[in-house]
Image 1 (cartoon, helix red, strand yellow):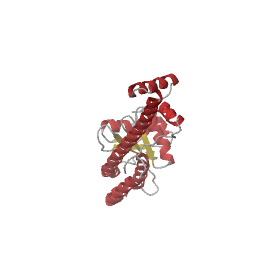
Image 2 (cartoon, helix red, strand yellow):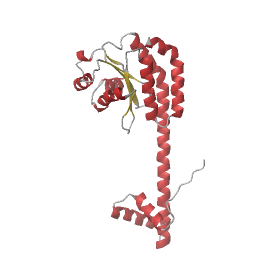
Image 3 (cartoon, one colour):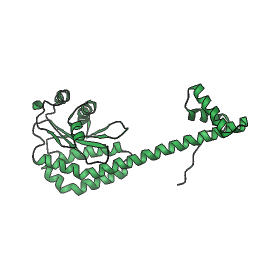
Image 4 (spheres, one colour):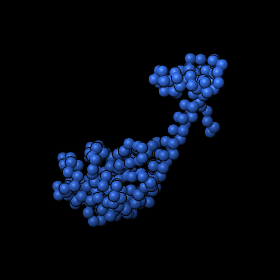
Amino acid sequence: MAGESTANTAPSITDHLHEELLNSSDVEDFLAELARVSARNLCEPRDEVLCCVTLLRQRKAATVASSGDPAQVVSQIEYESSDSPGITASEGHMTVHIPDLEQEDRWPEYVQAVLGHGIRSVLAIPFQLEGETKATLLLYSHRTGRFEGRILETAEDFVRQTSLALRLAVRFAHYSETAAHLRATLESRTVIDMAVGIIMAQNRCSQQEAFGLLKAASSTRNSKLHAVAAAVVHALGHGPAETHYDE
């Protein structure tokens, strides 16, 4: 059974995800692998389970990863819905189990859309993350009662086992994005400082006056300050400005 298989291989699953975390280029790649691993370990022979993982972060667009093309189609419905099992599970920090969609009267638009793709049962389980970040594992099956009893317990245990890896992936993504933002800010500042220096030399004015001239040119041209500064540096024949970092 899927439950027994998952229970017996939990250490290898987490080891695999931790290795994937180190090798992934971004959080989207990691989520895609997490969705595939989830589907593989919660399927039974000749009884496919479609899987997707949704991730919500502050000031970031929602990220949705799926285990394959059929799951991607269904997960798009979840992504576009204003109310759904995934949203309810995420906001309520609770498991949402729908054994038979045809008997479900919540989320009517979502239910009709998913039934149109032959899905009959749904399971949504929230991951245990930090702060305002939320993520949910969504499982879909073409038969009713697919996620009852032992299978439901196994899926919840799987989410507990993999929540740490997902927390680390989100944390690494935050650090990477922060570093990239800082680098871009420093590079922009370098170009602006160079342009201010050029204007000071050409106009024999103070730093404050030179910066004022740069801002005025930016406003007049309706261009970003960085773009105007880059044009000043390039016009002098210095080529693009580069910011150097100690390794």
